[in-house]
Every structure is written in structure tokens, then in C-alpha cells.
Image (cartoon, rainbow, N blue to C red; front, side, top):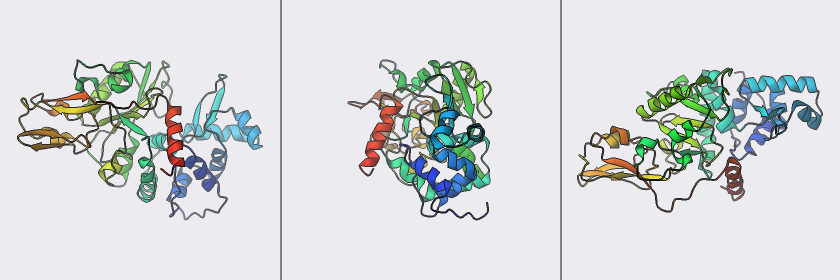
Length: 360
């Protein structure tokens, strides 16, 4: 990319400011890596229009009228941006086609999975190392770990938002995309061994992904198989940090995931909200083989006193270690007095705004 000059009133600065005002945040970088990243995704005209969008969906006519711009030009730019995942598109409460501002993460960045190249991958890495990792320290976290049902003891009540298999069963449409995080790391020469084609999206509307340009539709059986493949690869199932409004399952790893890397590389604790469960070891069954220690992505297990020990501070209740135990000595048990996640995405946004206002 040629050297760019970002004036004080640059459309990229205005767009960066609009994105940072969202609860998900997009903090400014002193080295302007944030602006270079946006310039790779948006043209100047697109950035200027996107900077004026609201998080709520509006029709092209409403947007053009509010911003005092030509409707035909606005409509074309909105559709172009929506096609490349740079803004959100959907139905307004009145049932009309609407467009709105999309958070950078989770949102714009993940939608670049079908377009990312080596240049975009390096631009994101520059921004991640410079500034973006600070956003994952805000509370409540962006992601929440959710275990697979098979990892939970059968005699416990499992609420729907606590089991990833239950979540899949509750939907009517399923899709899969390539993981932008693992694609990005591979493009900068730091690939990991985990599968790429396991990032899942969900919808209560049948056929929602049938004609999508990037998302590959799955049957229910295909979605279950994808989830099983991710679990077999030792990936951690993460969803948005609310009880309702769940629409994706990120099958994450600490070596590539933009959020979990905060824990693995930068030593940040609690970058994701833990599940409502805690790993438990049956001392009588444990053979102290150490397989679970190697499998745990959060370094929450160790072998001491002749059997596996669980660190309650580090265990996020993902259940990744459980299938690898040859003795069947591990199971998830419900944590005591665990507070539930925010009820909805709006409740989560409200809590994030409050945290940001307190200097979080």
C-alpha cells in the first residue's frame, strides 16, 4: 500500500472515531495503524459515508436524507460496502432493507475472511500489537466460553445458553466460514495446526445463508459434524457474551484467535467470560498420565500429588481436555454462585458503555 496521509478531518479518522464510540471499541493508534487498516477495507468515499451511519438499521433514503447526500450515490455505496462485509445489512423494524454501522470486532474484521490477503493480515497484526489488544480487557468480555454438552455431567441442569450443542439444535439455518484469525496468522508466516473452515454462523430463519457470497450453508447434520471436528481439534467454543441473541460460534485457539491471544501472548487474564462450569477430577480414576495437561489451552491443569489438579482461577470451563482423558476422570461441574451473562446484546452493550465511562 502506498504511503497515506491522514488529515485531521480525514474520512478514515471520522470512521475510526465512529467505530470507537461503539461498545466493541476501536481505539486510536499513535502509529496510525488503525487508519491504515481501515484504508485497506474502505475507499475514502465509503469511509466518509460509513462514518455517518448509525448502529441501528436505516433505509438508504433515511441515510441520504439525514446526511444531505444524493440517494442514488448513497444506495450504491451502501450496497458495495455490505457486499464486502464492511457494514451491516438487514431488515428494519418496518420490514424494509436497511444498513448500519458494524463493529470492527466482532463484525467487519471477521467478514473479511473471503477477502483477506497478506497486506490486510499484516495491517491487522500491526494494529493488534500496537493498540487493539487493549479493547479485550474491557468488561464484560466480548466472548464467552460455552462447553459442549457431552462434557457436562448428566445429572445437572444445563440452561440453553450454556451448551453449544443445544444452541445448534435451536436454530433453523447454519453456515460456516474460514476462520479469519487463523487465515491472518498464516498469511504473516505464523500458521497453526488447527483447521480453518470451522467458524460457524447461525440463524432462526431457514435458508438464511443459501445465497451468501462468503458463508457456506450447512445442514443441521453438517453443523453438528463441523462442531465435532472443531472439538476433536481441541478448539474452544466461544459465543457472544449474552444469554440471548446468539448468532455465531467461534471455534477458537490461543495461538491465532485475536481475543484468546491476549491471554496466551500478552498474559491477560479473563479476556473471555468463563462458562458456568469448572473442571473436576475424579482422583480415584486419574492415572496422572498428563494428557489433559497438554490438551488444556489455558494451562489450568497440572500433575501434583499423583493426580491432575485444576486451577480454579485459570479454568474457563471449556471442556476441551475431557475427551482426551483415557480414564474418563474429568467432567464439568456447575460453579457455585456464578453470575449469569447479560441477558441480551443490548444489556451487554450497556455494561460495556458503563465500563468505558469508568475508564475501563
